[in-house]
Length: 481
Ligand SMILES: Cc1cc2nc3c(=O)[nH]c(=O)nc-3n(C[C@H](O)[C@H](O)[C@H](O)COP(=O)(O)OP(=O)(O)OC[C@H]3O[C@@H](n4cnc5c(N)ncnc54)[C@H](O)[C@@H]3O)c2cc1C
Image 1 (cartoon, rainbow, N blue to C red):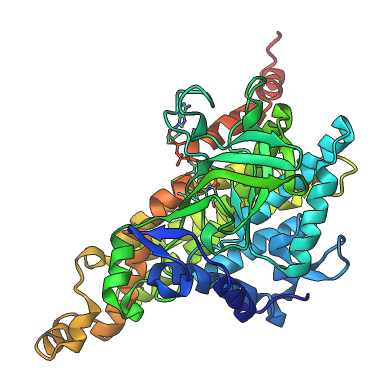
Image 2 (image 1 turned 45 degrees about the vertical axis):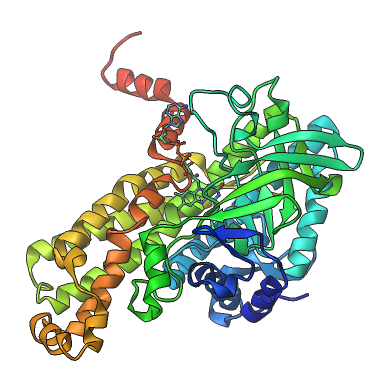
């Protein structure tokens, strides 16, 4: 099959009997619930972007595995140029959706799995890479949407896997002649209930003795034993209550939707198992996922989000008559600075990407630049929100509902008192869009997605050659050892 259209993807999802719960209610058809529908619509948009000729180089690539054009979302990079386009895809989809490209973590898990399984087959004489490539060819041929399942629920963070509830980290509960049985759960799973499949890779570095936790495999949406429990919050309730989405901050694509996935004795046949107990390689797969995801999700994706925040803020400066004020221009410039550093570092990470391991044909980005990109995003996104909120004023959180414009009593009052250089309606619409970014879920989401700040701090310190820097300083200071 060639690249699928958004409608073909939507039709495929309508055939799945989803085992999904949201706010205590079961949803079997994603189209039926206003919150789960946003994920469906976002995925439809990503499929359709792939069919627009001006985005072809960014969104698609010729697969060396099947020889035809495939979505970049299901393509582990084979060159530094590929990595650069992967980063550009993250910018583009963020700009077009204002939410996740929900196929992004799956794409990055493919990068890590391709690289680590290659090494395993070389060094351990296993068949994991062969199996992974066969599975990937099937995914590419059918242009399937794959989510990436990494993060365990973990329970008390001071306990090792297996020390507390054994199911708090996803584990192999049983090995059978025909496959494995999975137990446990993964949380914060972006858009997983609207994917065709989920690629699961280790979210922890298990030590010898913790082999059941070293597992990588692929599962199908809602296969027997899998339950999805969707996130739910005030914004979800508002979308249900409002009825008319046009008055919400991001009318079509909504917030970033995630879920908890529970695996209750889920059978996975051997041909879909890509790691089974090899603790040393679980560590490698996790590190390689982080390396890839910090460039794409931590760096370039958030540059796209920041573009939208800057755009909305600039519109509001004009509505409020602030656009010529020097201090305001300076604040917009601070926002641009954060954006360009994250973007620049993500692109640098791609340019400095290398084949890993050598001879595999698979490329991963430079770790230091990727970590620096994500670290800049962690700190910088809050800065951006701060400046945007400052410029848009308290109205960002005190504004009434746009529905007042449909009430004959309040309409003339709102129109008179809330207009600026723009009509009350336009001002309210754009302010609501900004509210979605700066007074919603994105601050914490952006901090934790691709790992919290401390993870990048540890990696940057570990990967920096401080001894070399000491020697440089001592040499110039003419200080003898
Ligand atoms: C919007 C969003 C989308 C996401 N999408 C996905 C996805 O699609 N797939 C996926 O697999 N994951 C996804 N994630 C998960 C993301 O990677 C995690 O949220 C992140 O790694 C942090 O994990 P946590 O939320 O469990 O927080 P924790 O790990 O509990 O961290 C909380 C704090 O505790 C600290 N901490 C944790 N453990 C220790 C320890 N042992 N010692 C000292 N300090 C510690 C951390 O540094 C941090 O400061 C997503 C997250 C978000 C918010």
